[in-house]
Length: 324
Image 1 (cartoon, rainbow, N blue to C red):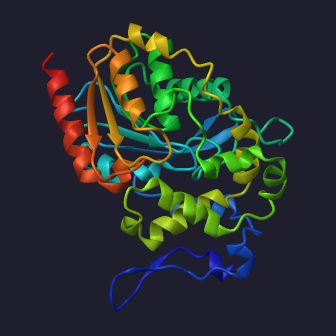
Image 2: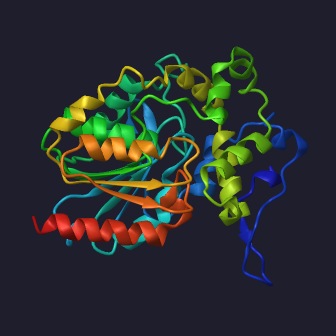
């Protein structure tokens, strides 16, 4: 199990040293146990709560002193709560900030039936999950900040729970009809769905991560390993195989966004290769009064690629909306 040990600092340089991975692990022939992921990737403020039979990993930091509602940050497909860390740390100085690992990703992993079978995470299941999670934490009203799939979950929650969302931030959010990114569309092929739980080379995962950055040179080895570890987590690849065929946004009613009465900020990377940047204008056009910010040179996850830039825009938005 030595190769599953956590990263540790180099005594000479202070830099994190990644444990070596065996050939079998690099090919994805070995899954990373959930307890190892928990040991390696929980952090200050990490907590667990039972939701729909799963131990859901979340981080709860800061306080409501600067605001009367918590900020709930929801990540995207195949990501984890860690994608918000650079932004959340700054916001937690003035707000209560909650980040969570959506199933089947991160430390949380897949939801399972009473018989232990991996559940299919489609939109109805995510609706049940986020409603149950918010209820379990006793959150009656919140500011929602969502990226990609998390953006879809966020605006859908705002539509379904009128008055429960004080402010809405959509970061490269899903919702409009689109062609699935090639790294996700792979799982629409039966052969990939059948083989991925047993073999999926880390090179494919690393390629996908580099693809979501506007400048792949910004990605460090520790971040790449985190994405690989989570993708190779127990049950995650099987869950993704069940989930991807349900990702069809063509039938979503985005016209309902015109009825929202929520201060909204739309943030988007101009070099997003996963969701067309034109969708930023689509969201801003439908949501009354929505403001839009485009980031030159950034990709699908600007909050991870340039956290200080995104943090500054969030603080400005929060301050302006507080005056109204």
